[in-house]
Image 1 (cartoon, rainbow, N blue to C red):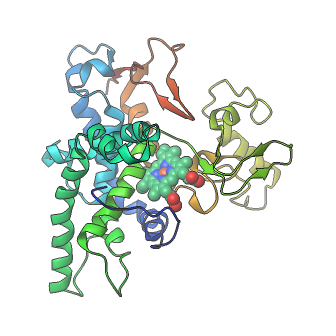
Image 2 (image 1 turned 30 degrees about the vertical axis):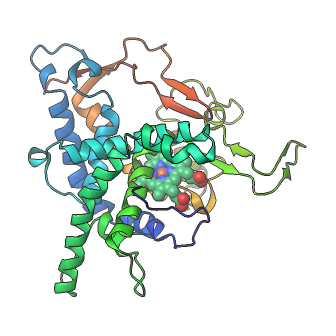
Image 3 (image 1 turned 90 degrees about the horizontal axis):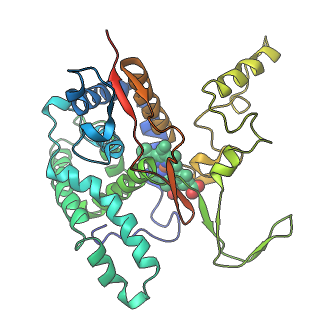
Length: 349
Ligand code: HEM
């Protein structure tokens, strides 16, 4: 993170990013929605433009130059929420953004090497694995002038209108006494960038490191320093939790909510009893647990739905190999496979 140290102990320097994402971003989602909708539509049109002519179903991997399309789209959307509100036609997939995309992947890759490297060699290995921190440096150099400019404008016009985006809300988390330097602010922005992009595109998981030895009710025990991970897929495919757990059923939760409402015809169903994609609970742990549960989940939920709505409205999709595995397992993580093929055909108007 270009020298920015994320403290091991949570909350030492505040958790302003939770307010910026969980409260401010969530409460402004309605304002962002038209912009995000336009970005999704334009992105799909541009990425698939060469498949209009013959109308054939064409593989998503054939039609695109880059092979990590999903994260490109997500990067673009998140960038749109972070600090850019220009439409896609003026948007260039420039070097900065390519590095911004590379940054979370470089961090993940380096982390895997560092994990098995003795302490004294870690700086060297990190430098080699990240190509001398190239992506982090470029992203940093791209962001610092933007932050500096915003601070300068605020100094000149303390009561002027400030931009309404996540970057501004993250800048505003700086304490009034001893305000952060622009470099420190950029560190915060890069950390959130990393969290948001890598979770969306690569890993979904929830882990905790034991600070003390502990014995669970069923007698199983963990020692200090052990890691505990939630087996998300096993839980989501558990037949004792979900009927026909292995069968895709797009209306599973909508039906359950409707039945709940029928049982209480006169009363509003309390939100916690209804099933919501954005709930964070031990039974629905996809967003993590407790205070650390994902503060970007309301934004992520909106983005997922906007992408699905646009695809289902405009495109016919088919998987040529529906039985082929779609994820691979890397230690405790399940990662989408990059050789999964989805065929797209534009629907006739
Ligand atoms: C489908 C998309 C996403 C999933 C499944 C997801 C899931 C998660 C999970 C499981 C955690 C760890 C929680 C824990 O350890 O208890 C987490 C943390 C976090 N997520 Fe997300 N996330 C997603 C998208 C996003 C987005 C779009 C943002 C930013 C807007 C974001 C920001 C964060 C941050 C900042 C944390 C750290 C929270 C903390 O330590 O307090 N996430 N996310």
